[in-house]
Amino acid sequence: MCGIAGWIDWEENVSLQEQTMKNMANSLIPRGPDAEGLWLSSHAAFAHRRLIVVDPAGGVQPMLRKRGNETYVMVYNGELYNTNDLRSELEAKGHRFESTSDTEVLLVSYIEWGKECVNYLNGIFAFGIWREEKKDLFMARDRMGVKPLFFTAQESRIIFGSEIKALLAHPDVMPVIKTEGLAEIFALGPGRTPGKGVFHGIEELLPGHCLYFSQNGWKTYPYWSLKSKPHEDDLDTTIATIKELVVDSIKRQLVADVPVATFLSGGLDSSAITGVAANTFAEEGKGPLHTFSVDYVDNDVHFRPNEFQPNPDAPFVKVMSDAFQTIHHGYFFDTPQLFDSLRIATQARDLPGMTDVDSSLYLFCKEIKKLATVTLSGECADEVFGGYPWFHRKESLEATTFPWTRNVKDRIQFYSGELLEAIKPEEYVGQRYKEALEEVDRLPGETEQDARIREIFYLNLTRWMPVLLDRKDRMSMAVGLEVRVPFCDHRIVEYMWNVPWSMKTYSGREKGILRHALRGILPDEIITRKKSPYPKTHNPSYLASVREGVLDILSDANSPVLPFFDQKALRSFAERKDLRDLHMPWFGQLMNVPQFFAYVIQVNQWLKDYHIRIV
Image (cartoon, rainbow, N blue to C red; front, top):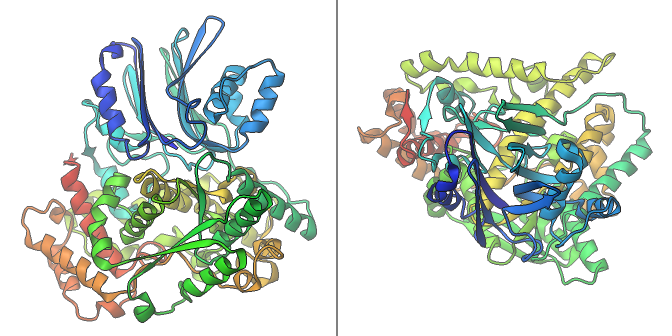
């Protein structure tokens, strides 16, 4: 994994802009702590920060390759999981390789297949390739959007980078927020509309899309999308196919020249990855697998089971670690660490995020990095297989908005009249919801229920999953840890998209068909465990800390967030004595009253640290 940046300009001689490119690269040092690379010509400049995972000597970037009279230059962030397959196919076509790196395989794939190369790739990636003689730029992002890529197009030039901070390191890219950006922060946040970079003029290349830029202008276009069609496999074939795809995806993602480990919560998804990884290690004669879990100081005392978090992780983690003889590492974080890391988490995302859900992951990844460079995580299985409560609840299925923002009124009751008038939050969310549904590829003849379930899956895959992928990428890469997500393999996503709901809920369980496919791999206690999300702190000291943080903001007349809130209403709410007993899930199932206060703190810090100008 790495950080990339680039600047293509038809009017300015960017070969003279080495310092600017270094500044952009330096902003991405956490993503790539191991090496830096620069390449400059009159119209194009690339910068790269490298985290070495495969072929330390052969994967140096920017990577140059010549074919005939054409010079190709590439910067790339990601991993290809079908590198060996592609290399063999390209060698059969006469290509020769100087390294074992996936970087070289990707560049040669473009040389051979041009823009069609993306259709051959299995992996997570964001890259840019410049043809020096033809003077054009080709960029692409993986199908699920696991790896980020932002850009700004300004008349005769394009500036791009792995993170927004790389663009803001360019002197001509300003931290400006307009009304739409405010709506993204205060109505949809910590979610984002696909393609929106929140900052004015900054866009995100959509998942499964390419960008082409030449002297004739620029355009983006999709190379992949979800296609609806009848599912023709019977139940037994479907279960066998799912097992084969999941196991193959996990095995492919274990390849690295550095230590590989897994996240382990004791839930179905992380356990599936851990079980397959541990078995593969044993088959290949490798040492025992290292596994990692996260929890919080005094959660054993303060944990309160609820419909979203029915039980703690620790007992199930032990079941898995014992069953597969892993070397397990459990980390516990306390309130001061979570609170103090809110700022770091905001800077890692470049935006206010999922508050302590982010900061705890940052702290967790920081500890893991001491022992491993690559980890595998169970992200996205719930979106792909239908694990979330909102797939199964009448009120969510009948809602006319995103399932995770049904309670938008809970948050906007504290906004100032000026902000409400400017962004019209309920209308904004409603419009974004409508746009999302218009994208769904319908299947003629589906029942009303099946059509609605397909809509819910689409919303999850394209609007909810990116929030978690952003979180996982930014928090892990902030400490130079590469996290792979096997359930995001596009082959799994494509297949499951058309599996009917009656099969997905086999045996009447959420993710029932996945549970059945994993029988024989995992212990029964894990197969039957009810879904439990990423753990959060239940310590009342965290609520007390973020509450005091908000009251401090309200007491400081210079707090930049104040104009956006009804200060009297917010203060009255923060001073209530019954806050711990209130249930206010304002974004998904993990964001409640403490996270609302923490989000206010993050927005305030973001406005300060990024010197945001509202226009």
